[in-house]
Image (tube, rainbow, N blue to C red):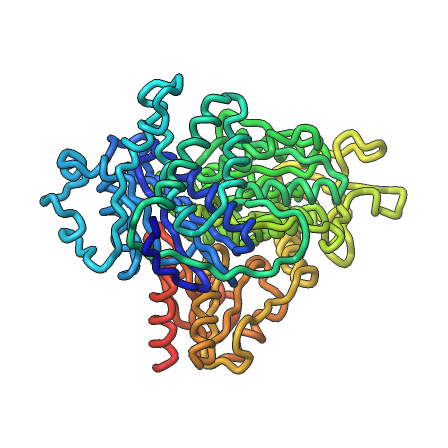
Length: 615
């Protein structure tokens, strides 16, 4: 029977998969995003996890989502959804605000009974009218019962059969977007390779879902999404945490220093530990410690022993690590601290995203305790910035804090495995560079002020370092006031000097802009899309996005002072804006701040920037 399908040709489309935590929406979204990448679409994803480990089934607090933005020229995971897969009424209610007026909603009618509506706090039996979804196209399919029927005769219990319903919905979505099932079949075969019956069951349900859409007489909008020609190479779908792990491994390989990770599990940073544990064959030593303090202290010990030492955490853990990071500053040891920011303070919003740890990263230690702070801008950029953080730590013998956040850590994009020849070399500033016969731990490079790092046990380099102040000339413990002032100055000068060794700030957008937008970290994709749309509409606007925060790029002051109007957009109460005004005398700027635990919305950004340009 011929389907009545209205095919829309679009540059991009946003699909949101949503249901209970146990409905498999993360897997469904991941497979569909990989399919789309293979079809030639750029992709960006955003998993939206509930804070509760397992909330009561069908309730609003237990809704788990996975958003996929695919098309051409994709910078972020998208805003309003063109297609919503809602496996129950709670998923529909939670995601109603993310839907476009002409969107398509696919629901499982088996999960929209009166009892299900009551769990989601609906007052009527018409949930669409109740929450104002009257312009959307609804595709109502009894997904659960069709899944069970599909698996009749399989040696699976009722619960296991029902769990396969996410594959039926994936089959329907693949039909809606004209996606071949071949790649999905391969991915499912790999995922469930140790349980052949699950492979067979999921493949059958997936195919039956696709065929159901193909054979039913349904009036529904479908989408033909613009593709792009991509640079040839080997691509994988990578999230920010995995990319961070790979960047650290690459830095270890290039520098010749073994990689050591001392860490304690914390949402949303734990996956970096999980990823590095798998890479023992590359000489990686990844250890889960009993707490945050033990994690950073073992890393400091590994640094003293000559390793590229790393510890990973989120905001609460960074607070606990503060004293030990101060020790690394005083002892002048290379150390990489990865802070995957989440909503705070305290336990806060563990599964949501913010940029609220900046001030803690810059100043969250006792005394004058300067170090380097850098920030990643996207899931794939996490690789680059982990590499840069390691390079700076090893070449300038200093702790470096790398800030990512929950949005880019869990979000993913298609990533081309890079050619490391394109990356800058890493030459650790160790005793191999010292050209005299009488080494001591106090000796410094005249150009960078970095001391010559000697791994414990290096012949002829016996020494002690620690948290007590040291004499500038001898390295012996000193309480002399003038010496302390000199050591405070030289530790700061070492950090300031790093500005000579990092890339300069670049401008994206109109070169003669009427407004300069300033951002940092994981807001990059939304900010870039906003300024591109505004420039396409004839407005003159530019973006300066910071990867290097302490120290600032050498040209930061000259760039920012070129513009009459500057607005700093960040997901906190203005921490970076205040920092810029501290560092750049006389800098005038305005601020755009949101702290909602969710990424920026491009439409809100465009409204705020347009208003500022009109002032």
